[in-house]
Image: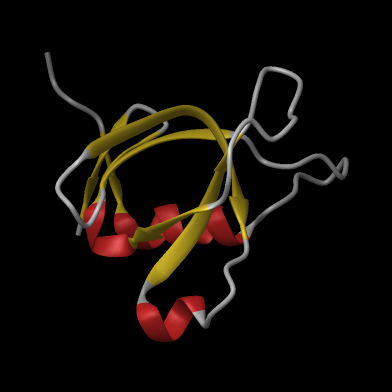
Length: 93
């Protein structure tokens, strides 16, 4: 069984496209490692802004949502080098 992969630059492009043409937020699943080493999996999340320059700090914001698209927690900053999986595909350079 071959594991599907996705390039990190394509993940970042998908995170920048915050809405689909119908105006709804793009929902995705993401797995990443936090600064303290904790592995986090969000089965449903949307891209969100952060209170600092995301591009300068190589960070992106993700917000976990429920099945209806309502926020279920707070925005979590994710370092782009810490991304492990995106929509079930392993992230590679």
